[in-house]
Length: 426
Image (cartoon, rainbow, N blue to C red; front, side, top):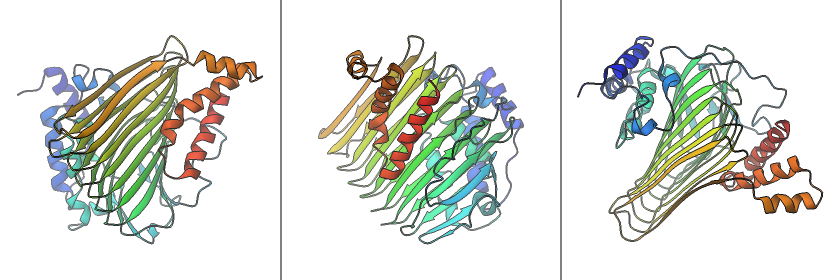
């Protein structure tokens, strides 16, 4: 079926502004992804899957300008021993990065792999993204697969002694960046991946994650604080038998952020926890869209998302748990909540369960509301100033999502950052 004229025009304009890397072992995946984009078209205002979030600035040919946010605080995760991989406006910065050598892991750049005829990434690049196009098309992810020139391939073969930190630095007000990462975790291996930074004025990121039997991966992302940035991120994860996958994303500031997550639990006794926290003020629109598929026995999934909104900010949550008929003894839980600090903000939620097995425990809930006046009165009656009491209750509200972080020290660092940012906003 032909695309509507407006969508076709917008898609052609965007594609004409890009050039595909040619040749190498990823060429087939790139061409297949481009075909997916041309078939579905880029998202538009009338698309059901984008009914709460206007994608115009994410798909237009040139990126809107975004000022660089300057601050005097210590960069995120600087207090941790980690292997640093730095990208500036989407371009790998070798001088700022560490040597890509660490026991228990092999790291290669996507730009280098693109010039090779044989590499393990060929078996994964674009594969999980393509699987994630059903039942709902995700054309911005396919666009990334087709055109991203930079990113890293991380092959975890053991248990690295320290986390791998992907750092995204925004320097140009007109930057338009795409990064594509591929992560493979071998049987019994375990790793922690940290991400932080605003990346660019407009950022399109895709991560494909394949976790083999008995392996674990922990992912913590702190999206940058630049006020005017726009971002569309996509994460596709495939879990084998007795695996553990935990992901947490923190968002503070940004005009528009859309984080899409697609997780498949394909092996028995797998565990997937996907969580996020955001604090939005003013011209802030934040969208978490999550799809978790249970297709194995005795698996557990958790979706925990908390949003704090004020001064007209908008929060969106679209979350679904799909339990297929063979996924008996599934334990699925989904919660999305918004704390509204004024009457001008809004929270739009669409939680869903679709269950075809008969021996499951699944639940979902979504709520929004103001600060608990009784709790606020209790704190104020004990001498806590109103602003400080509000901050304490805000941190307590976000706590359930932050608690999903596996590493206690990283979780503590996140809480301290949030506390300092809340104080600065008073």
